Image 1 (cartoon, one colour):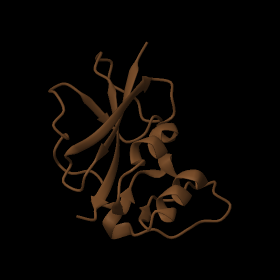
Image 2 (cartoon, one colour):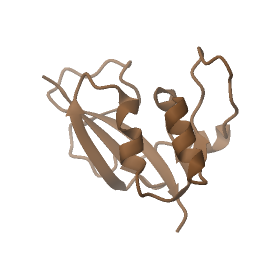
Image 3 (cartoon, one colour):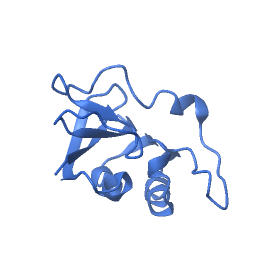
Length: 126
């Protein structure tokens, strides 16, 4: 069995919150729980997090959803492309050596026993 770490980071890559799930759990299922109680100007994530419920949750709290739309979305929406480029800081979010970082469950993971790390970043209001 594999493990997936769903990680919420601030704009400089510092971990704020994480949740553990089985490796088969989709990325977006933990987004609302990770964001719960957090204030942000923007939430940056890859298109694996492009779900109506997540975007609505972010926008209902006054933040900007910086998530590119999936190609199969019937109604494409705009997002801040320049801000999106900053979604993954150069640091590994203080993770142990050998940990695999991925942006999407669709990307192949290394064969090492290290868990996959799924990043969801916020730009703090403070």
